Amino acid sequence: MTTLAINGAAGRMGRRLIALASESQDLAVAAALESAQCPLLGQDSGLLAGVKANGVKVSSGLAADASGEQLPGVCIDFTVPAATRAVIDLCVQRAIALVIGTTGLSDDDQHLIDHAAKSIAILQAPNMSLGVNLLFALCAQVARRLGDDYDIEITEAHHRFKKDAPSGTAMGIAKAICDATGKDPRKDLVHGRVGDDVTRQRGTIGMHALRMGDVVGEHTAAFATLGERLELRHVATTRDVFARGALRAAGWLAGKKPGRYSMADVLGLA
Image 1: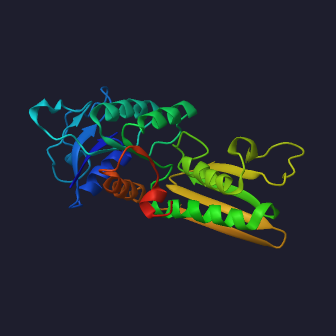
Image 2: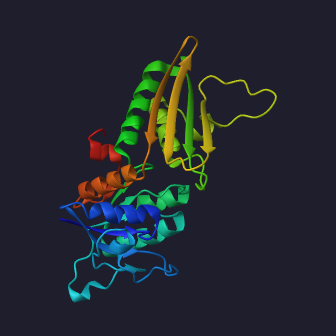
Image 3: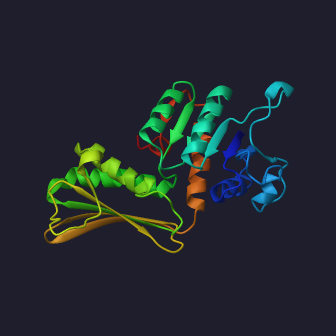
């Protein structure tokens, strides 16, 4: 049995993680974490997630383990960068493995994760969907084989409330392509186009973000040359695909030695 701490337990993803974990015989929620300012502190996290009471109250920290209570084996984090930084420190202090699904993290945040991974196992992914992570691998393979004769354009669409752009998933696609072809995301990505002369430059990768309505998540990588176009597309119709992927990742990560891991490791693609 893998015991879980859910960081951001009162959020949309946190609630779905708690609800879906309740259906598993191999996972159990042991802690439901929120900020000290959350008005839902003290509520039963199971009831909050729309399932039966689980006896785990939403709290702003982990209880001291002097009572002999077992600490969670894995923490799952779907929050915002500031909350992720705090939970990284907590997990290092308590020797808890960490699954990070938060996007919009800075280079400094990545360095913090690198340092923490010397002490604990950390699995980070811009998207926890199993299908999306297979998409990363497929895009890398296609880009490597087709080369710069094929123009690459990445398009992503999300709901109107999403704050960061491009999405972490779109950047994950770009990174997979760049890693496979020796490109540099900082130099070879073109974010949208505007102006009198924006003729496509050979070898660049176009990146476009759409924000509309209640779109859960759509990502397309197009590879086009004169005469043909190949598109690889993933459409998420419910956030449950991300939650289920994170729960699978948590079960896989439990007991792993310190280091950085990815969904490619979970899927055996690494």
